[in-house]
Image (cartoon, rainbow, N blue to C red; front, side, top):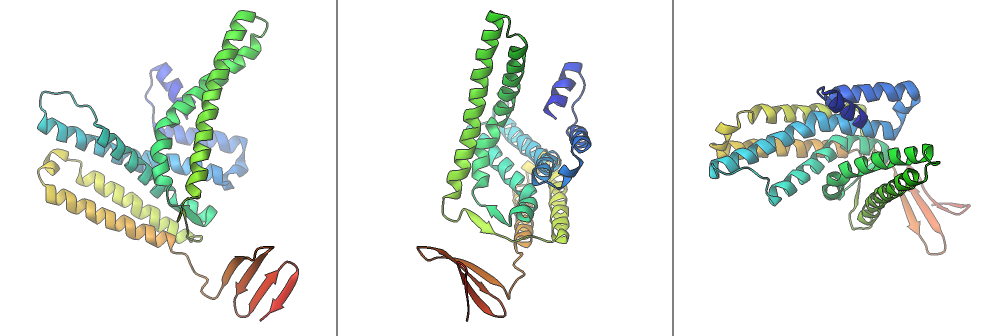
Length: 289
């Protein structure tokens, strides 16, 4: 998709996100048809599609709201996003991406990370830098291999590629460090279980409906600014609907007659399973109670 965007810019053509997603999807499936069942494939295309359909339209509404509010108070000044607005936009972007990928996370991992919204505030802004630096560094490294016989040019490009790829490595290591440390915090995970496909369909239909409702309600932003109670009431209603939908998709504890506990007994681990009968497994010994 990134290469399609660059090619469109070079050729002077418009870039359509959904068309680029479709082209990338077809290309991947032609090369690896069975990747349609992999978690990485579903996460990648699900997240990017959600960003195009849900996240970007709502963020454009927020940008329009901030711009109009600034113009009503400062008529003769040029609009520049404030630091608070930038932070709020990053938070909204991270929150909506989490809402888009929530069912996928529940299906593959049976749990959701609590602090991922705050991590995305750091991760998302530097993602463009990571892609750009990695692409340029990879191209420079490939050219270096072909020009290895030319000492000056080859050495210079080799140095540039090493610096750029080192920056990419540092950014990726930062991502890994943040993800690992966030999981060490208290209440970092919520076990949700695996939702049914019917719940997933209902969740995405409600999420899409809320998105379209917000876009329709706040399309005429000039009139909405003069009706503060109406604007707040609409946001509260949409927030309650989304919260109810999140609780609906994450409540999947259907095994009321089954319980399994992992017990740390010091010198060895034990597993306690409770069902119709209670069993305790410790190493290879099985005791029935």
